[in-house]
Image 1 (tube, rainbow, N blue to C red):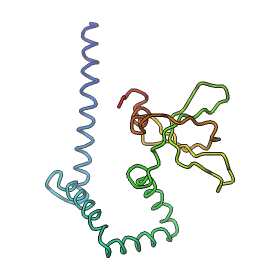
Image 2 (tube, one colour; image 1 turned 135 degrees about the vertical axis):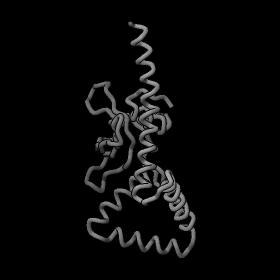
Image 3 (cartoon, rainbow, N blue to C red; image 1 turned 90 degrees about the vertical axis):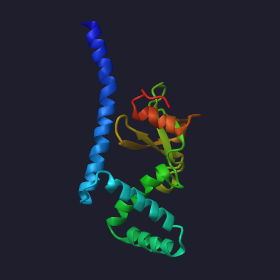
Length: 180
C-alpha cells in the first residue's frame, strides 16, 4: 500500500503541473480566438503577437512616435483614465521597460530584534516628497499569486541582497520551493 501511495503522489506531482499548464495555455488560445471570432486555433494569439510586434517596430518611426506621444498625453490628462493608464504602464515598465523597478532585491526586518525577514524589492529610494525622509518603498510579492503589497519602512530596516532579482522573485512566487 505504501508503494502504491508513494508512486501515485509522485505521478500527481508530475501530471498536475503539466496538465494545468496545458489547460491554461489552451484556454488562453481559445479565449483569444473566440474574442476575435476566428475558427483556426491559435490564430488569434498569432495576430495579437504580430500586432504588438508591429507597433513596437513602428514606434521607431517619427510620425508614429508623435502619434503615440499625443495618445499618451490624452490618456494622462483624462480623469479616471489616467489612473488606470498610469498604473498599467508603470506595472509593465517595472518588469520590462527602461524603468525597471524590481531589480533591487532586499530583505526587510519589520520587528526590532527579530530574525524574521521578508523578501522584497525597493521601488522608491526616497519618500521625502511624501514628508517621509529616510524611508523607502518596498514591494513585497506574495507566493503563488501575482499579488503583493507595498510597505514603507525606514532605510535602516532593509538589507540589500547580493542575488539576481529574477531568482529572488522565483523563490518568493513559489513559496521558497523553486531554485533558479
